[in-house]
Amino acid sequence: MISNWLAIQLLNATLRNTAFTAPSTVFIALYTSNPTKADTGTEVTGGAYARQSVTMAAPAVIDGSQTVRNSADVTWPVATANWGTVTHFGIRTAATGGNLLYFAPLENPRSILKDDRFIIGQNKALVRFIQP
Image: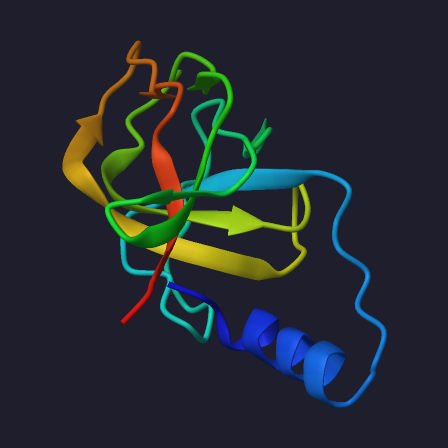
């Protein structure tokens, strides 16, 4: 899903000729609640957690939808404390702070305990635009 912030940026850029500067690097954040379009979710904190940068492959039509996949595994550091149950991820404009771009629920929410390592495998469909 697309965030309110990005929707405004895209509408202004495409319909009002307002400049939009895309981030040079995007980061995946993990959440223990739905980030929502308004960017109000609870992001994981502590226990060696840090957002991870991600490189995306070119968009392609998959099952009738424009889809972007990560081009390599995205690997978080080993948790040094429990992170809680990770239910969602978000794609953000910065390693800290910044703006939420896209978000989605995880297919398989997972409790991250001390000494666990969370990985999103290569070629995971991270952003999908469903076409009618």
